[in-house]
Amino acid sequence: MNALRKFEHRPRTVRIRQMHLSLNALENRAIAAGLAGIPSHVLAGDRLSTEQCLAMYQTDDVPLLGVLANEMRNRRHGDTTFYNVNTHVNYTNWCNQFCDFCAFQRRPGDDGAYCMSPEQVEQELRNANPEATEVHMVAGVWPALGYEYFLDILRAAKRGRPNIHIKAFTMVEIDLIVKLAKKPLPDVMAELREAGLDSMPGGGAEVFSERVRAELYPKKMSSKRWIELAHQVHGEGFRTNATMLYGMIETLEERVDHLNKLREIQDVTAGFQTYIPLAFHPKNTKLEHLPFASPMERLRAIAIGRLFLDNFAHIKAYWVMLGLPVAQMALNFGANDIDGTVSQEKVYHDAGAATPQALSRAGLHQLIREAGRDPVERNTLYQALPTPESELAV
Ligand code: SF4
Image 1 (tube, rainbow, N blue to C red):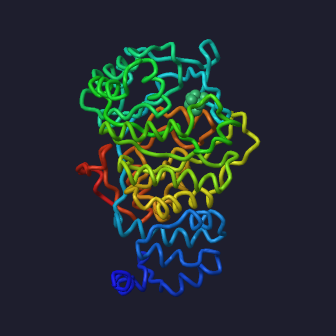
Image 2: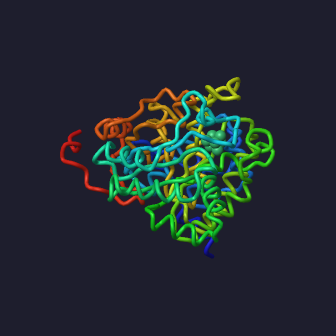
Image 3: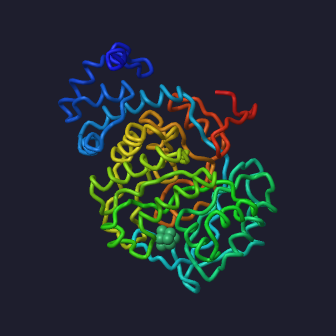
């Protein structure tokens, strides 16, 4: 009976801005694209299987994925497209993990190696955009810094800008900090919170494949540990994001497995705010021979994120990695967030990202409006903020 009612209420047409496409037409196209049944599943709000996710990675019809992902984005968010005014502090590039895909890491004494003191972090925040509501702080892994260093840089950031939201430390850094503290994780998280930590960016997962890890980043913590930490930090009340670094040597099945694991965690904790697919930038890394994902592959990753991760409210088109044109297009392929104004981003620019170092609020507004969407400034926790008068003019 319930199934029948669900079927009766199933939408027969999909509004894609000014266009109307019939479900029959979508299904016929899906059959030809190896995606039979997926439009009906998606539009009925049914969860997609891992087999269907794999089919979405295999199909040539990325525009069809875009149509479906766009519809789901419109249902959830309408034209609202979030951005924030943020700044980045990559406090050190010292790292002992030697990930093959990383262009950012250095050893002390190497050309370009640096480690910021707490005083430098404080000064960086004082110098940052006065309108920034968030600082994004991530860095390399260097145990000799000691536990107190991490508390000190959080306190320093808050001294530099008392009201700013500190989104800091990937799961890899959290793992290091907990080990250095030699205390139970709840105690460490409470001390980090006390020192100023507000949320976490959620990186460091790369792709949850032990085969890929053994080959490219064997020193990095296991996917099992990442997942365990995600459960624990969400349990302590911290919100995080989730990422997938794709375009290295992983198989499509491994990408599907990664997304499925994220969806399973979210079913239990609901602690992820945003999913951010990260296209691997090969330049200046040991994997320089690999190609950078094509624009269509980058759009596919966004669309699949929206369609498969049905329990994630937000899908982010991180313009620093995607490039501005693709990030703009991604707003009609399922993304409802384009990240922020950013400044001083080092991790991806060291790997050859050709995007600007920063965008103004007006620049982001223009980018979003050109995509036919409505820009809405948010804070880190996705609460809408009032738009300054000067940015309202179209
Ligand atoms: S990705 Fe992170 S952990 Fe790996 S080498 Fe680079 S900075 Fe270190």
